[in-house]
Image 1 (cartoon, rainbow, N blue to C red):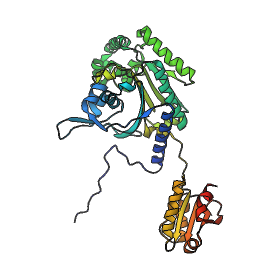
Image 2: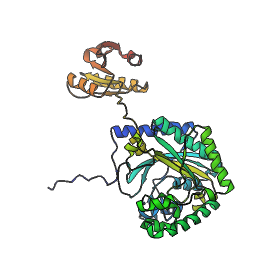
Image 3: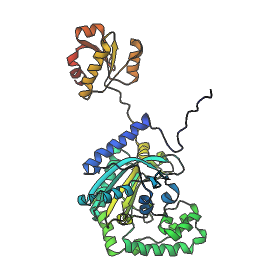
Image 4: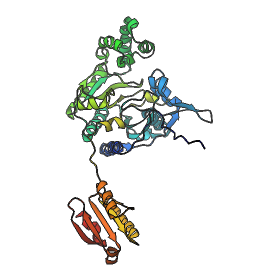
Length: 422
């Protein structure tokens, strides 16, 4: 009989366990705690949507739509796509569920996303993101609140050192159109020197050239016109109110006049939190520079067939944030139970239930002699061992051993919770 080959994981996926899982969970738990402080409501989204949700919202010229989406036809002949980002799906839900009545609505989500791209450090084909959106708010104060949320999250995770908020404005529709025309003229003058990707973008979305990493594009981008001369009075005032709000909240920021976001739906505020060159965060991140990014997307709802609805949001990769955390402290259970003899295991199970209902963590060492079970208790990092033999059970007590000091005492069964919380 031929030996069965164990299937390999799909390229670009990962099995998260041990320290990586502890980092992952810490990021999520911190995000959940901070989003509640800011009044964001959690939302769960389908992991796949009609392909049109992403094709219309992200823009046909983006790399995500043209190269990276996992799209397939289901048995009914419908084209579906595994979500490559959260925002478009959240906007679809906002429109189809009639959530307009709750606007302005602050929403948060986290979970897996999918993009077919080259796997590398901090970048996977199935990855996970945190997402925060304020929908139905046109005021600059919404941008400020969202950035304060992001800034506080990074601070509470302890990964803000050496990380800078890079900020730009993409202006309103009038500003953007005027700037786009100026960029087309500039890049057309240098078209022969542009990379092939940028030549394609020149016809479809010249703003994306500003985001090019191709070496021969960078010098051309460096002399490209900034948006500032093309800002309308209203757009300039909007950006001024955002920066003044950040200053009043002590959120540090730097202007990056060439910063654009990868999707077509962004307007006004655009931002990224990026590790400074030479910082510990930059070394941990490798080639992946953006820790958290987002901006205002006032035109997205209309692209999905809805009414004009202003909105602003950001997303951050959970894996990337986890990479930047300090090594998590190993935390063992409060107690390891060691039952020895007839009826002792059942008694231990009952006691463990009492402890867990009192928020005391515990496990049981099921196998081996006393020495091996004590070794397991020490290896697990437990603070105490609870030993129940037949004589202890007959006397209604346990032997409670402090694994740090080595002290041991008899404790009545009914007093075990008190002894472990003293």
